[in-house]
Length: 335
Image (cartoon, rainbow, N blue to C red; front, top):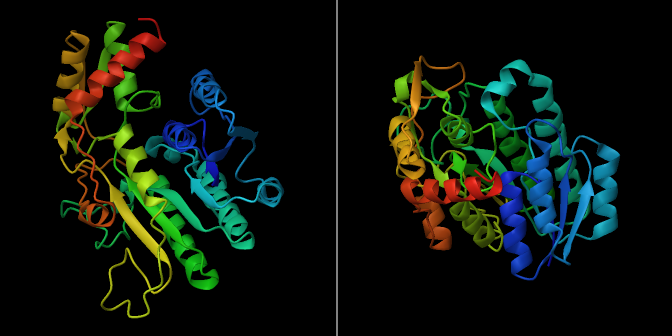
C-alpha cells in the first residue's frame, strides 16, 4: 500500500517508516526538518530511509494548508500515519504558538486531506500527557482526560476530539495512540536518556528532578513501532449500540478508537539512571532538583485493550533498552 508518514525524519516516524518499507510498502515521508533539536540527526535518519527505493521525501510544513492539500491531491495515499508534531512539555511553556501551528492547525490539515481523499485509516500520535492530573494508576483509556497540565498535553487531547468529529461527520476511521515516554536508538536529544548519556560521558552532572522520585512508563521504540504496524491493519468500525452514558471514552458510535501504548512496568527515574550508569560503566554526578512545572509524578499504562486487539504488548525492559541505546549512541557519535 501507499502510506503517508508525517514526521518521517523524527524519532518514531523514522522507525515506523523503516518497518513499512521493509514490509514492501510505499512510503511518502513528510517533515519540515525544523531546528527544535539537532537537524543533523534528523538528516541522518532521513539518509537511512532514502536508501529504500520505495521511499519518497517531501519537505513541507503541516501548517501550510495548500501544501498539505497538494500533497494529498498528488499521491493517492491509502493510509496515513500522522506522527509529526511540536513535541516537548517544557518547550510548550515558552513557545505556545509553535504548538497551535503544528499540533492544532497541522492536525486539522491532515484531517481535511484524509476526508477529501477517502483515506482508509488515519493513525495519529497522542500522548500519555493527556492524563494530566489523574492520580489513579495505571492510566486507562476509560479514564477522563479533561485536566491536562501542559499546553502540549492540551493539544494532544484536542487532536483526539478533532479526530472524533471527523470520524463522526465523515465516517473517517481514526485511531489515536497515547505513547508513554518512548526511548531507544535514534532517539530525541531533548529527552532525558539522550541528555543524561551525553553529560555522563562528558563527566558533567545531570539534573534529576523531584530528586529522582518520579516514576515513568518508559517504552522502547521497537515495541512502539510493532504496535503501530499491527494497529494500522485494525480499522475502527462504527458501533451503533455505543452511547456516551454506557460506552468507553476510547470508543464511539463513530469509527474511532484510542489506545495506550506503554510498557506497563513504570520505574523510578533514579532506577532508570542506575540502568544507564551500568550500561555506560560510569557513575553519574547528580544535581538533585525539585519538580518542574508541567511535570507529573507518575505515568503507567493500562494496555489491556491493546493486547486484546492485536495480541501484543510492549515488554522490553529498561535495562535491555538502555543498553541498546548506549550501543547506538557510542557508534553514532564515535564515543
